[in-house]
Image (cartoon, rainbow, N blue to C red; front, side, top):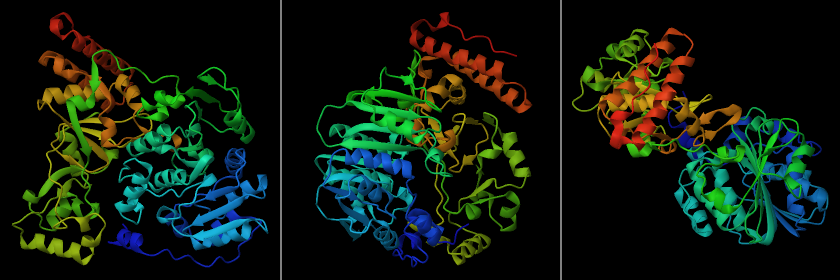
Length: 576
């Protein structure tokens, strides 16, 4: 556990960089990474561009014959050097908030280079110059770790004529502000994490790029390890041009390792042939062309870039948001204090009235149904199973427990410092359905029959219909492979194929319109979930049970279409 208040102190602290000892201008990036502590580079989101990618980005920018090029996050300068290698007389303006990185770039650029070095945070830089080219690898800093307030986000968005989300990561802000410095006819080349293409905060960024006809080529790497070893995210290259021409966007989806020359050919070849062709190159890639309207209609881009077309929802299906609401699981701000085992609760004298059954880790929830017996087993294992929810009146033992938390500095923790009082727990009814936040094969959905709360390892789903049989039927549908495949198109994809869902992402998942089904239909669907649960618990092969569930879910959709005569349609018999 980090020191209480450490995150707040870290974000508020000024950036102080260590001296650049032992720097070798012949190996700038390697030398800088060796000289600078990892904690310094992580705070500033520094991941250096590989040489082959730098050359590709520079080739795009320099093809526009720029007289001036802006690098707004220059680091040790690999992108600026790539530009100067192709166009030695180009004027470079190099900006960086890190004084050590700026010094490294200054020492690594060719002697006599026409370069201006600006020590400033680009996001608060008020210079209004326009440039013929912009080239950048912006810092990868999540919105949680951005040290300035929403006024910066709002100002950048207003200047671009869009409303940016407060959840926009730093690189998304760089993307928009970099484009604002582009002269007519100029070009931008950047490498950024690919999550913006599927994240909700990316929607206004996509709108901005398409509305201004900037996006010309997008190269999407499904696994960022291809670019940044050890980094668990996706990555993409964006090649933009401020030419106001109608959109004809080349989209290249790369699923495996690719040789630099093959990647260059894909990015710059004059024509890419038939849409959706898998190229005969090592690892393969899908190349497609889109007009702006085609991409505007797609809320999530990862799926459509990698496939010829997204799957259509089966007949009788509606978005989950029609049937349910979603939200994240409970965030305590200090799990070790607020999520405890029964033995620890007794030892500290915490009243049962101030303890709520609560699951904290997804590893203990394997089957698709979490029952009261599963909760009892969790309690017996001595693992944390109770959420501490203290309210007045408090016993002397509970006041002592709070005093111990205060002595450890918990009220200064980032989340708790925003609550009044700091120990106030989130109050909500236990959710009937849980949804895993991360998954590789797909998203996990759990029918919660235990009455327990869950921490934010899960998102929670509240059906609008409060009947238990409705929740069971909805959980059954969500566990089908039919729904799982459709859900992938709405997920955010990280390195290694790791999928992530936010609560709002769940709302678009297509499910059978259970409103049109009677109690018998709902009961039979719930029965298929029970069958699957038994098979999973037994460790037996799940193929038959999942096939039966899939057939039932499709039949439920058909029945929803023909609900006026629903008695004529029966669910397939449950397998045994």
